[in-house]
Amino acid sequence: MSLRARLPAFRRVSPWVAASGLVALFVLLPLLALLRIAAEGSGDMWPHLIATVLPSALMQTGTLLLGVGLLTLAFAVPCAFLVATCSFPGRGVLEWALLLPLAVPGYIVAFSYLDVLHPLGPVQEALRALLGIASPRDLRLPDIRSTGGCIIVLSAVLYPYIYLSARASFALQSAAALEVARTLGASRARAFVRVALPLARPAIVAGLTLVLLETLGDIGASEFLGVRTLTVSIYATWVNRSNLPGAAQIALVMLTLVLVLILVERAARRSRRFTATGSVRPQSPTALKGIAGLAATLFCLVPVTAGFIVPFVHLSVSAVRRLGETGLPVRIFGEAATTATIALCTTVLALGLGLVVTLAQRLDRRPLAFAFARLSSLGYAVPGTVLAVGLLSPLAGFDNMLDATLRQTFGLSSGLLLSGSGAALVAALAIRFLAIPVGGIEAGFAKLSPHLDMAARSLGCDRPSTVRRVLLPLLRPSLATAALLVFVDAMKELPATLLLRPLGLETLATHVYGEAARGTYEDGALAALVILLVGLGPVILLARMSASAIRASSDTPRSTRGR
Image 1 (cartoon, rainbow, N blue to C red):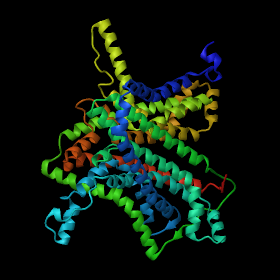
Image 2 (cartoon, one colour):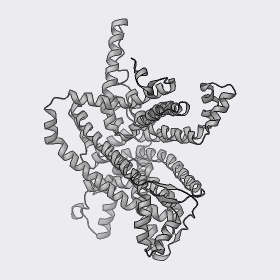
Image 3 (cartoon, one colour):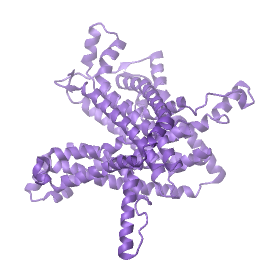
Image 4 (cartoon, rainbow, N blue to C red):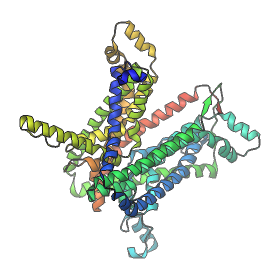
């Protein structure tokens, strides 16, 4: 009996669902290959890894995750509550300025602070001049090349993930819930801790999970600042020791941590869900005046200054100084073109795959299509280093098979067609960021009534014509937004680019990495500034979309109750 006959889910599978299944298989391919590569290692490798690599890497990764998690919560949640429920000087600007660090990759912030806080950098020079100290040896600040320094740097750029979701949750909470607590004798602080904070916990946990996943996958900031996390260990084991099975085995440990984080996040959100019924009155902002207002403004300025203002000013000054001394370096044009080409190819591939997955859900509403869509979004939770290790083997296998076939048939050699070109990098980045177009197009489809499809079919359109003439034109805003976000994320991504780029290929991100590794920070300032400025576009778009969503939800009558 065939598989289609035995399993009802596979009966009458439409071409759309079949194509969506192939996309899900494409996303799962690196993970399956990772298991095979890890199994190729000798049995003696695990004792070696357990004795020499894993304890230190796990300890430093755990410390980094704990520190970044606590520090981002300490700044993001109070800032979100202040902006959402209070009025104070500068609130209107800080509401969107608190999102600006999202435009700056962690490795660029680390790159900037290494130069700013260097013993011969501007901060320590200013301090020595102020205190009348001549020698750098007589005044040394704590070294930023440490686990503590890495925690501060990563927290400065990752806190917006929590701020964004927590601010929306606080802004949409019912005023009645807090007023009931106040009438029962609770102070304002107690009402925040006992009512507002628990109501916002699902949103905070979702943002915290993204922060921890980004921390786990970071390689630039961790390596610059001397923290040997699991990601750095994978890179060192593969590139420096040429031990791919060993790197795959460390990647499996890292993947286990990713799964644990996702399961904890799902469990935390499942136990605390809230729904809306009836109508409620939105909260009126509490006016903070005098010292309270000034304290609120200064508190919200701290993360913006650390995560955006300091790196932006430093990179601008360094870039202008370098341009004045040596002019515009010629190679920056080639690296910018390479970066744009890779990001553009990634965007086209990710949007195409995202359309296949979401159209399958729209046109064939069976559980299998939704399951494939969820599997296709798994790549965002997998660090770039893990994807790179898992993707290289199947692509190299395909190259070898194609080359052998061409040699036997035509006497020609295709060489490393995929694994030796930018195709492997584009495939890895498309898998990594496929969740963005899938989520964005799903949201776009949610605004389009299914009656549109029925009306088009009743007027004689078949399914391809309905998609081409009705659905795609209406999805243009969602497609444009997803394309912008994928393009910028692909442009900034460093771990997969470092591991999968062809020999001799340089992007803006690898340029910054190389200059930081050599200690020539000013030479990489211009490339870092370009990445930062391009990243501002989607952040501004995100700020406007978030504000519009909160305003639209505030206009909708609702109430909250826990269940």
